[in-house]
Image (cartoon, rainbow, N blue to C red; front, side, top):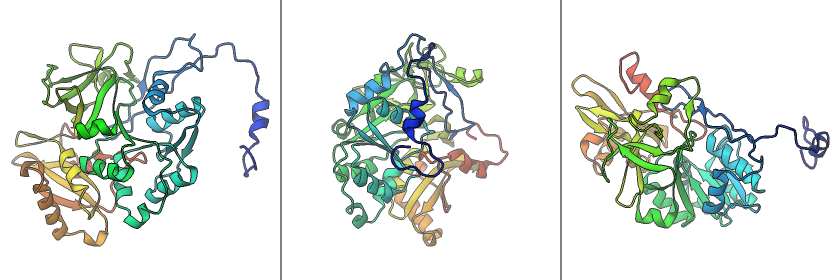
Length: 394
C-alpha cells in the first residue's frame, strides 16, 4: 500500500525492494485461463494459445493495440470499472490500462448513483458498462442524474449483452456521442466495434469485425445472405480456443465444415455493409408452435416501461405449442405487482411487437438472478418452470 498504511497492509516500497531487480531467466508473457459466466449452462474453462516463449513480457498485445487506437487510452487514462475483476472484460481492460501506464478505479459493487459520484470524484476519462447498468442509471430521478459532473468522461464503452435501442438513444441524449460498443467474448475469437455516429446510422448494430472475419450460417452450416439471422461465426486461424477438458463443447463451437470458424453461440445477422446485429443467444430461443421467437425483442420493449426495473422473457411448457412466451418482471415498486400491471405490460408489448413475440403471461420477482457483471442467469429462471422435463433449452 502506498502512503499511510491501513491495518493488514505492508508498505509497497518495502515489498518492491525485497524483490530481485534482474528479470528471471524464463520470463514469458503467459495468459490467464478464465471461465465463462455460466448464464446458459455450466461455466467453461477457456484455453487460448499461449504467446511464443520468446515474446517480450511488455510487448503490446492485440487488446492493448485496440484500446489505444479505438479509445485513445494512454498513461493519462483514468479508467472506471463498475464490474468485478473476475469477469473477462474488466480484468483484461484493467490490466491493459495499467500496462499503458494509466489508472484504474474499481467499484466493489455497482450502484447507479455511486457510479456517477465516482466519475465526478476521480474525473474518470474512460469507463466500461453493460446495458443493465445503463437502465439502472436512467431510472434514477432526473434531479439525481443532474447532480453529478461527468464532463471528464471521454469514452464510455459497453458490451456483454445486446443494448435496447431506446436505452442507448437515451444514453446518447444524456452523455453525448462518447458511447462506444463492441461485441466479443472471453474466447477471444473475434472483435466487432462501433462508435456513436456509426451507430446512429446503423441503430442496433454492434459494428463491423476488426478482428476475425464474420460469417452468418444456418443450422446446417450454410452461409446466409444479408438480413437473415443465423449463428454468428468468426473466421480466424490465429484466434482459436478450446474448452478445458470438454471436447464436446469445443466441437460444438466449430463450424461443421470450416474448423477455423468458431462461434460463441449467439444468433444475429449482417446488413449489406457488413454491420452485425445481435438477435439473441441461440440457447435462449423459444420455439412456439414451430415459430422461432427471440426473447430479446420483448425484453428490449418491456425494460423501457417506467414500472419495470428488470425483466427476463423465457419459454415455458405449453401442451399445445410446446412452449409459450412468459415474462418474469422485477417491478420498480413491489406493491405494483399484480394482475393489473401484468395485463398493462402485455398490452404495452403488443403495441410494439406482433402478438406471437409477446408474453402470454407475466410473473413477478423481487430480484432477478443477475451476475455482478450484469449478465442474467436466465437458465435459473427457466429451471423453475421446466423442472425435470426434457427440453433442449434447459
